[in-house]
Image (cartoon, rainbow, N blue to C red; front, side, top):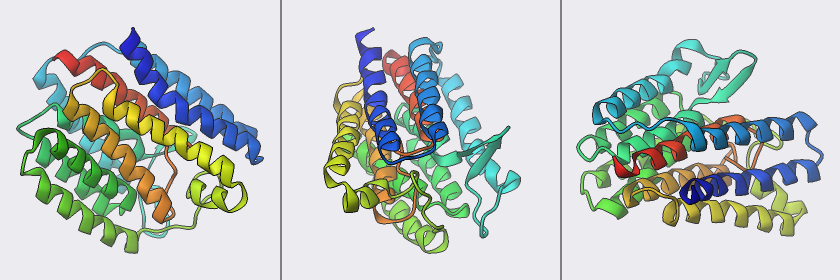
Length: 266
């Protein structure tokens, strides 16, 4: 139970700080309510999802998740030729933030196929195009290499870096208030609040990297993906995951933390 609590803390800390930010800056009340509901569902996933110990089952799941990354290309919606969102009923979720964290965990658990799994996710990032997902792939590969010293991850990280730069040139959209580049914008008007929000996100990164109940490759790859998404939000108009409005990254990292815990002994 302690391990589950740390996993929930690593997710809830930045999300709760983000909810405080939303309230402080006058965001619509529905934004805070949506994030609160998402973190409750994500916490339930960490606590109650059944384990997936079979290697075959994990590989079937990762294939399904990779296919999910490509769904926006067929389903839309398209904005200026960009398709990176999943329409689910009345909610539109960012596909990369929702799906890739779990892919990261499953790739880290699959020593043989980790590089091609990450490259498949990178292909989706390039086609959408989505520089944030590309940077998440790059940093997940870096984190996984740091844990395993698998040389095959070095070219994956290099290819992801250049693919992210290309995607950034093709796929930038106007920043949405309370969603994107939050730390950059907040630092201009409330530097202390921006510092506190950054500390909450940094604490989440270190908890994922060092304290959650999962093997080192899983921890480092998952923390790397969070760093990649967060880096994109600092340098361009991409969602500030976990601290800004958006259920997709909260649910995505909730599922990933559930899988990380489940497979720690598998």
